[in-house]
Image (tube, rainbow, N blue to C red):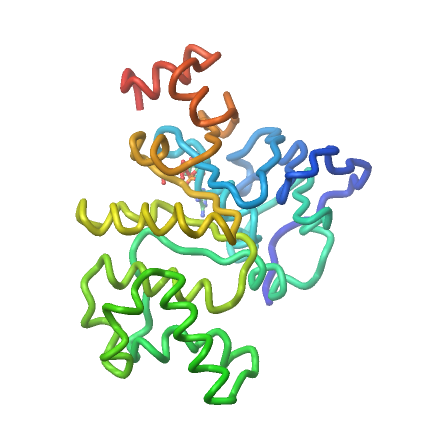
Length: 268
Ligand SMILES: Nc1ncnc2c1ncn2[C@@H]1O[C@H](COP(=O)(O)OP(=O)(O)OP(=O)(O)O)[C@@H](O)[C@H]1O
């Protein structure tokens, strides 16, 4: 696989001693060519919590999210420094990006199902990983669709095209497709921005159930959504994390004036 990322030279950092941290980020910087997009990000993301990334357009939320499973490696001229540890393993030191992306799944803004059946969409990843046994695949497909709270709506039409589902249903099948790979972390980039309010609510309810099993990091422009679903919130501005705290604190007593201005809608 093509990688344009220059690996950090400095390996002296060790994860902080936070036993709840699933992901530990230390002095992480990212450049697109000459342009620096992330500045010295350091934070811990706790296991089996939902962490929301908020901030105005272009402040680096998606770039940071994509750094967690090295999706930025696919972009030319990207350079990083600093470290991101997942389960105490420095992900930019490992050569096994496939393993990383199996452990850290991703759901995108718009549902991006393949033009194939619902069943084949969910079975796609496991099949690519060599699982051929029909019984095993049936089990994975059912378990994943149940995990994404969409099984009852699609169980009688598994062989129909996934593209015939509504946008909200498609997004939950995308979540099922991510779950089918048995990830430990799920990254979501504005997963409900293309959905109507009812589908949004269903996905939000689903997220609250999912955090029993997964560590979830979600980018959202919707302040109410961040306040409703997340345990912790990081406020990004111009590539920096200005404030990172429990969601209750960020939304009730933010310490930084810029956070307060953003969450009260005074800019962004
Ligand atoms: N592939 C790329 N090549 C060059 N610059 C990029 C690339 N992707 C993002 N950027 C730049 O990096 C900065 C951060 O972008 P990013 O998409 O991470 O912000 P964001 O906070 O997620 O924005 P939005 O909320 O609008 O999605 C922006 O200035 C953007 O133009």
